Image 1 (cartoon, rainbow, N blue to C red):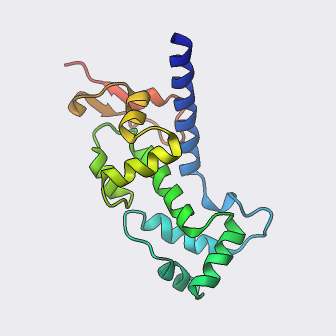
Image 2 (cartoon, rainbow, N blue to C red):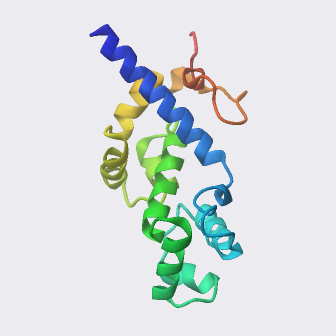
Amino acid sequence: RLSLTLTKECSLTIGAFISSALYAAPDGIFGLEDTGYDPRIEIVSAHVNAHLAEKISLADLAAKINMQVNAFSRFFKQKVGVTPHQYIMAKRIDLACHLLHDPTLTIDEIAAKTGFSDRFHLSRVFKGKHQLTPVEFRKELCGDAPDPSKYELNKRHEGPLTDMRSWCKKLEK
């Protein structure tokens, strides 16, 4: 039982570390090596990153690079390897993972900041990717945090985290 708990904790820590590193990585380094560089992908990616909390339509993305919607969808999938919708959802989930490190944010606030309609939509999509709900993910990452006022975000970390638990520093009252 202890071994299973440690393995699960290590897996979550490693997964959160990778997610944090991928979120911080420039978008241009993924999926473009085999198909050649195209600046239009960077334009679309920058727009997605800047508007994750908002509704992002294929028509808006296509218009950003002067393409028709169907042609844009084929172009994007060919260049990136996933559909625009899959890309947007992956970016939203990665941002949610990043925000879940801050125990002062509620799940509703995280859902709003990541463009999900509500906490239930976030939870369904999040569980589909990580096999845990956001609440379960946070508990595994930071431990039980019934009172967020007893925790503070460790602001010393500027880049990818080396120790995920350092984000959840308990204040002694």
